[in-house]
Image (cartoon, rainbow, N blue to C red; front, side, top):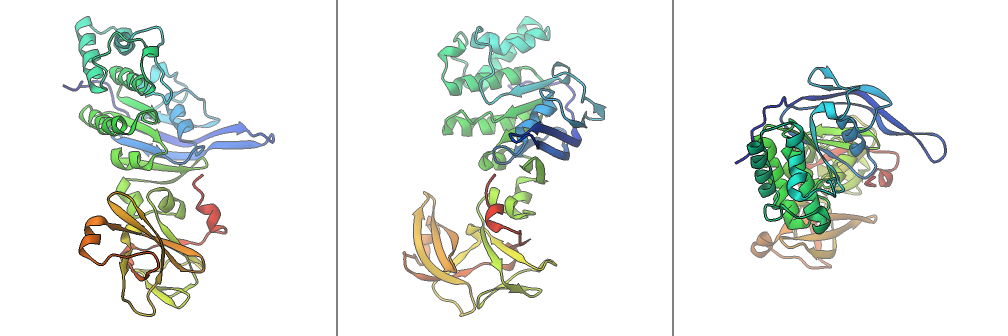
Length: 373
């Protein structure tokens, strides 16, 4: 049985938040660069991005563990910018095993409810339920140094859940766990948050975590927010080359010229839904949207298969379409058995539909834009 929470579950509003540090050369470095956002009440929100993008700094600001250089932070309509961590009523799961080393597993989890002065029977119930939830019910008397790294992280999670806070902050909580336990806890965390109507904010660089757990994703790069929305919105409608490249995989191609509904690469014409009003464009299309054919017309995009990788449930084809450009295409194994199969050296035509094409303004340096940093 899941614990029902009675605390206020806050909506988080961040206004013009800035955090600056002194750089190695003496200049200022922005960890957060004038961030504005709203995190919805009772939703599971993920802060996603590469290492050093500012996501953990933002989480620590919300927790009150770091002080912003400037800007305001609100829980609902209350300015909490000056409030201590203790007064913000949060549960925090750290990346690196934040547990009391001198307390056994049971007392680590019981600490929060004890501090709140809950009745002994309720404390026992909370501890038992949360130890069961994270798979540690069989180790209540174990000391933290007797647990594996993954078990200590699960203990930290149980401690945070036992705090019965309306706001749960998680900093890379699954990074120390093995794949099977991590996958199990993804679904368990999401279920716990939904049933108890918790506002959860989860930091990760793992796009699969973000896609499978989140109501909302906040994608960050170099201290700024790149895009916010549901997993489906960010995957199907990325607003930038970085977003398309970081969430999922994407092929990119510089467009030489274009009309309203066509773009040109060499002598090949690619139909698109509509071109934006930019002088230079980059086309993007996801590998699973590319359909390979052995026959086609002279003006279709085509190339030679240079490599084939087996990925378990699908094959990945690497196709040289000319000028050193490699496109990737996925084909599920079930489809491979039904339709024609391909081999290295085959000449193939690439078919994709106008609605599956992304078009972005061409940056000054495409290679730099594609770096995941």
